[in-house]
Amino acid sequence: MIETGEILQTMRMIQEENFDIRTITLGINLLDCSYPDANVCARRVYDKICRVARDLVRTGEDIEREFSIPIVNKRISVTPVSLICQDDPRPLAQALDRAAKEMGVNFLGGYSALMQKGATRADERLLQSIPEVLSTTERLCSSVNVGSTRAGINMNAVREMGQIIRRTAELTADRDGLGCAKLVVFANAVEDNPFMAGAFCGVGEPECAINVGVSGPGVVKTALESIKGEPFDVVAETIKRTAFKITRVGQLVAREASQRLGIPFGIVDLSLAPTPARGDSVAHILTEMGLEMAGAPGTTAALALLNDAVKKGGVMASNHVGGLSGAFIPVSEDIGMIEAAQAGALTLEKLEAMTCVCSVGLDMIAVPGDTSAETISGIIADEAAIGMVNSKTTAVRVIPAIGKKAGDQVEFGGLLGFAPVMPVNGYGCADFIARGGRIPAPLHSLRN
Image (tube, rainbow, N blue to C red; front, side):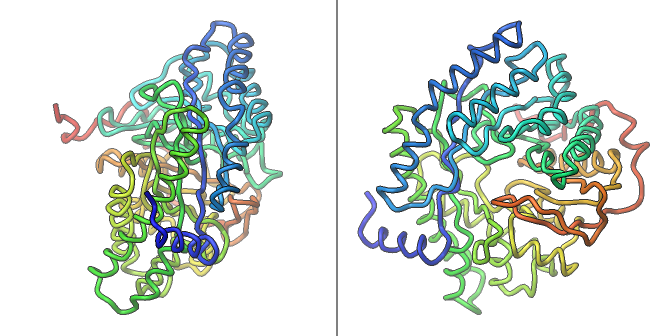
């Protein structure tokens, strides 16, 4: 049970420190909708989503109103589409987007393929359709897993994804490459992630499940303001205690949604997910620890402490913690990261170093419009290698800003925010990417 003191603390976090439940995401298994004919498959998928998710948004709004806890997004994730559609996947993409609109969710994830070891014909068809699909749908999100610690890195898929990201940016150039903001490339993708753009309902998941993502960078920053100058032992303990409180609220919301919808509770993802709003920044947590600006020497160490302490505090508050869980560093969605990038304190190379110790990877980063597909593939390969060797989830969500150069700005609006276009290393890697094949899994993958 949540005690009176916890309730008062929670109300203060909501009213003064930008705390919210970032998303209730309903995972739906669509394997039983598979059918050789794409149009029949699309109709089955649409019908099932509308049947299972019909009360999702209303229930989220009821909980939000009754408990006075902001629930920013209601979302849906589905079985990776390449597993259920053996024909042209584009009719299914349109059906998924219509279902998302009909259910009132802001995003639906799962236009995805799992290609860490190789590709099926269905995977290849889905990949080739991504640019067109993301330029013609509004709420559909796409992800591709190109590597894992057990399988290594599929460099053929890495090469293709550089081209696909580039083509998606060109098709949505009139919206600053918005299609690329709905496309993420993973290594070690997880099956129960409630956050977009990478959410999908993995094959090991139940028929359906409620997964909740919590957020609270502002709460953590406020807690650290009360211990200025204290040693890092105290900093870590303070973050742990704060993460515990945040996760308890997420657990409460998840249980309520599960009971009211009659759908099993999956996990709470206790990630610190920022927004462009001032006072809701992961970067400002790092500066509160004593850095002049995110990107300064010591940034990676500070982020490592933050990520670890968040996980330690969260696992004590919920029986089922999953997803990505930790600290996110999306540039366009974090006002502190935006300011650091604009000032030149935060570079692509420093962000890559930070991804070794954070929850995900290079996220929501705008790069110059003339960045080649091979360079994008090289960035993906580097990030996948970090994930593979360190047995962690890493990802790349970059946006080539067509017609813009380093120092310009792209605008997405809402939670996706805005971002300065960051410079990219000008030396080429085309011959490296052209090799294809697979980078073998590391020795420590042989754990059986």
